[in-house]
Image (cartoon, rainbow, N blue to C red; front, side, top):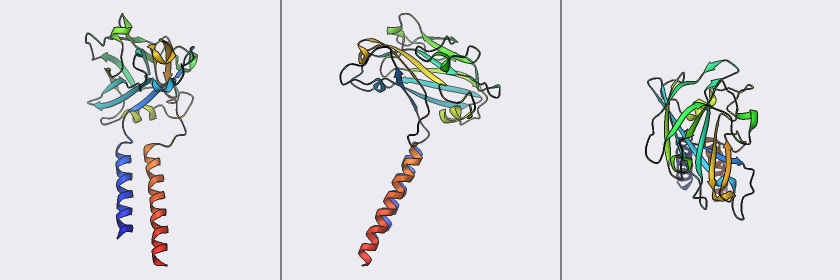
Length: 230
């Protein structure tokens, strides 16, 4: 009976982790001309990106989700790829900024690149840039603030941010560097600026991790049952 309960618990863990696999993509800072202070890490400055598609319109939500002890970083610019250059297919077009408040105001236009990344995240034809209105320390995204932007899209209704990334395929123009940000006033680097760009990693996705957890749980259950049978 305990073995059955263990299997059920492991399957429940798998289902929970799998359910959260489709969610926010986190883009962390990974470039600065300045050295982080003692006990600080560039990785603490983060931007969360969500996307939903309804009626041929993709709504993106960008949120400053920086981690403590970082509290002062303000996201000034956000860049986003809109076309798969390998196929010529447009993924997004005709963007509109939806958020327009006293604290969060952005313009949208062609991108002029991202500090520290050169040609990796610069494509005049298909990269768009969301730029905070002046003063950016006030109008940009402080920790906890969000910006919504909407585009017409070729992605099907119900698509998520993961589908957006997958739409670039695996050629020369992959999902690598398809999303990025430039932040200023970051306490992590003494009040200076830094940048972050989406990069693929070898870290297991939530579903992969769940399978590993499930496999480990089942192995423990089998070993326990063999001992009880002796």
